[in-house]
Image (cartoon, rainbow, N blue to C red; front, side, top):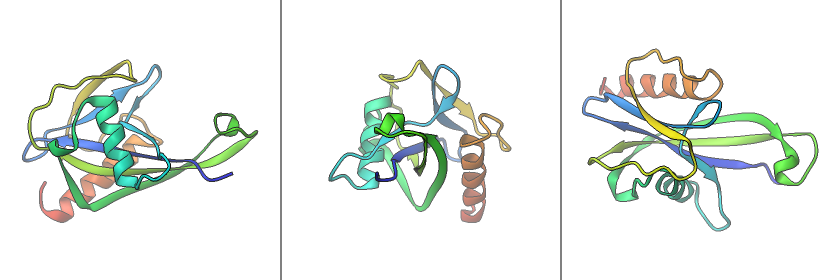
Length: 144
């Protein structure tokens, strides 16, 4: 069985950054992300999932070419046709919204623009480490 892979985006807005977008699941906040389709590149998958789950088109996102965040965690294989646990890989790209877009949710309960005010305490396993990595990245770039 091939390792499951999900690709997505953390979307920022404002110059300097003033907020970031998260999607609401029944029990947690998450990113717009999803599984790689056959023949897709990782960035194509992330852009497709972003558009499908938020309505944000690729031409409204400036992608930061110097940032990628990877996380690996264990998930139940049942979703992937097996039994037991399997390691899943999550690859997140960083994008900056270039113009106002009306968010259209299709697969989540809600969405929210969170204030950019590090350190963040949203969800300790995936979101908080990602936000910390983005904060450090932006400081290195001198955009904070």
